[in-house]
Image (cartoon, rainbow, N blue to C red):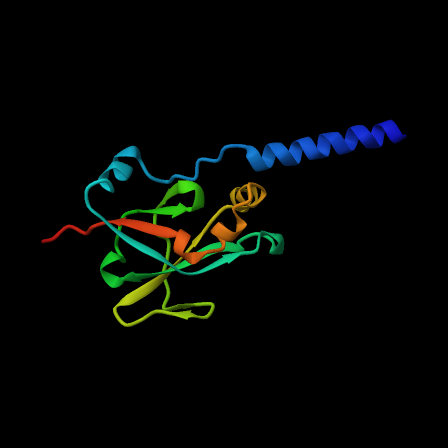
Length: 146
C-alpha cells in the first residue's frame, strides 16, 4: 500500500513538472510578421498587471493603454521579464478594465499570459519582475501612412 502511494506521488509530480516545463508556442504570427517589427515599431508599457495564477485561469494579464491609431493593427508582440516574446493578433479592446480607464484618444487592451508560463517564471524567481508593469511591453508595427 505504501509503495503504491509513493509511486503514485512520483508519477503525479512528474506529470506536473512536465506540464509546467513543456515548451509552449504561443505565437499566432508568422515569421514575416515578426520581422516587420525590426524596422518600424511602436511600444507601450502596461498600465496595470495582475499576476494571481493561484486564483485560477485568466488571472495573469497586463492592461495596456494604446493610441486609437493602433486599433486596426494586424498583430502585436508582448514582451515580459526574461525577454520572452509572444506574438498575438488583437481580439478586442475596451475603454475600462478593472480600475484603469482609457484617456481620450486611446483604448485599452487586456493581454493574457498562459498560467503555466507564469507559474514557471514564478518558480524561476521572477515573480517580482513579472508583477512589475514596467516589465510588460506591447510592440506594434507602425501603421502605414497613406
